Length: 476
Image (cartoon, rainbow, N blue to C red; front, side):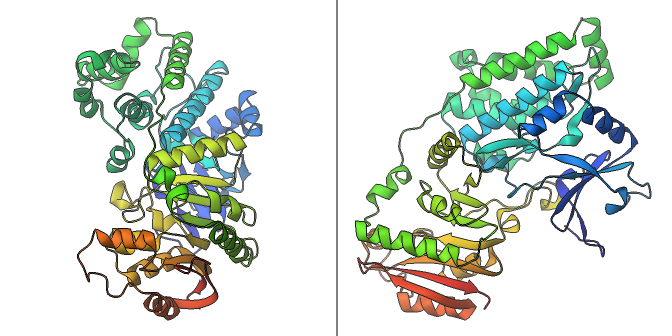
């Protein structure tokens, strides 16, 4: 991504639609519209349903802005510019749990159903059109709304299948985590890729026959036909707005039926089995609260290896927003469901393998920014994490500290826990490695590495004597 001399930074993910593009100007999120898109926006803003959805927090708040705020493209000035509410942290669908993707799908379908009743539709069906305020999804692609044309099907149906419905079917019916599949292809899972997994009696599972096999067969049959030819055929067959609304209600009913509650994993029981004493827990919690509060109301806190969200919740009491990262989709899903039931809108749980975080994806690798490019936190929590990376995943300690420093904003702080080699958890990890493989995994070495890259402001050895907590300001 490049920034112009005026500080305007185009959003790479929006470049595919020439009718409207998103730009970042400082902390503002702006959208340029061409003449037709501007006309659609004026009609949308005057409609009964759109302000209602915005007031309910289901669609991001949007208002008109001066057209001069963003540069023209190809020499043609934008007909209108919109200002959107800023989402605290942008995430991607392959970083969501099953419950998150399903709830995002249900919101998308609710919005579409509501729009249809008022003469509008959405031209896109992508999961990327939704983001999160904590555990609450929000629709962000205002440029996707357009007046409906009678006799035409939902243009976003294929996108919805590939980025939302097929991933849900994969996990709900086969127990296969969808995240690696979505991460591999920015446009989602093709029907041809999934169909071989749903042969025999699996074809009869809810949604498979209609939305995978029949939809795939229809795509093959119409492969040589133009879009206008297909629309003409549907109009001739009597396809109506009412039929489209009924189809959306049917998909909504299907998505509500899909469920996936995996059995417990090692990580889901980690807080109970990790070996902290009651005194350790109290001391650790007090240290974390003090360390986060010292940042004077941080705008963003990253909790890396968040597990059940114990420390993310503590941080949220002293920060504007917390992103709680965990590698196990089952653990993230449990955390998400708990946060959703609490109505929590300041903690966002995400599925990210910290030894293999989300890279940049799409066109030129920048259409979807990687995790490190999106993370610029005032405080990074790395609690009971370093030993898993350094011993469990063979990442050298200097690399671990450099990575943590790279996730912090200028002058940001890292709150990190070093598990000593004689701690039971470290001993267990070392037992599975060749003897002598980690001679530098020592507390004094770790402290020297931190002090070479920042300044340790606070230090606490937990009562057990085998773990030490640090707060370090990086780059200082």
